[in-house]
View 1: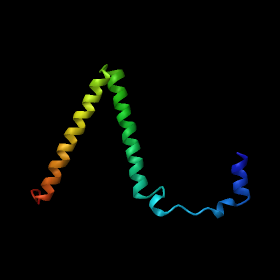
View 2 (view 1 turned 90 degrees about the vertical axis):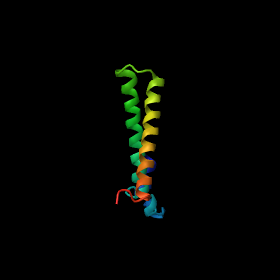
View 3 (view 1 turned 120 degrees about the vertical axis):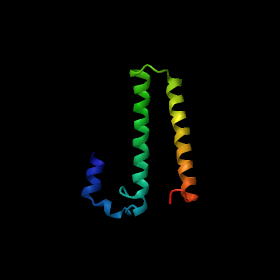
Length: 89
């Protein structure tokens, strides 16, 4: 605590270079990183719900997430190919 107070009172913060806009808290990169962390917490919550409340075994929960990942990859691949082949236009 005293180090922080000294840092402010001695104005040592003026000698530190500012963070570039690419790594700033509101940049696209950091917003994407935040979204990934939120997604991981949501997946953890879902895993806990499936194993604790539903009574699914841990391997079953992993299988559900593996199948969901494969299905999502299939859908995204089909959408990507459809956009590339101009099916939707």
